[in-house]
Image (cartoon, rainbow, N blue to C red; front, side):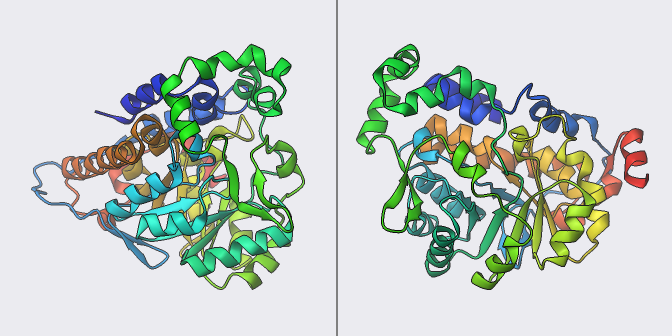
Length: 386
């Protein structure tokens, strides 16, 4: 009935180490929780006695028409969640008429994901493997028809994700029997998942991180690789020269960085704290969204991710200035539970939620939403104007 139901299904199907990779956050996971709770703090203001039998959920993002203001966020390692996971998710997104964003750290070739979608696709860029490797991925993405490049800027190092350490990620990836033994049972107790993984070729490679002279990067703990591939504002200059289509900057959390993204020629930005998986203890994305929107005005499209579990969450984000939202965990739970059918169900749940919320608000369309449909806590407003 809801995303939490899909989460429970995913937990019952996946090994703990894989489920916690999706479900967990950094350190105490306070930002992970705050992202979700922020939506509870924003309340809705309906217009009653208004007939809205049909609501228009359509909007445009970077000139692309989508059937609802939702984009699949980049989620790495989807092939560990379900065989051909990225293709399964892309196919569901294409059928739903929304954009799918493919992570650099994916197990399916970007060409195959674009073909599976049949709709608009974006490519998310890490500089893993170095500049030459990134340029190769950019070139492939252009030729495959990806319409935008999403550059993630909030990962100079990987966040301290304690669940991964406790579950023995490094040991399981070491290939050494001794270190693996204390942790391998969590795989063996999920025999159907394990059989599906082996039938899909076993441990995936990063098919879009092609190291010159070596081929696709082997699956490994990417912490060290990320530390060696920090994205800086200067990098955006050569990325812009290499990519002549829209660029989206993901990981904006302050008005200062938002204005800098505009100055660097970005076409859109994503207010994001990486779903609480990087720096713990930062404010929720919903709380900082209005001050970012105010900082950039109408010069750039603003998206938001973090904490999306209900269609009403999406409505609240649009009311506070987001053009659309990106959701990761919501569809990753569905993918882990049932592949393409699970993603399709997650999107159906969110779409129905959005439409019902609009009807109950007395609002005929996504384009008619504005801040008058919500109330926000008083202390939020004081921080926006300080």
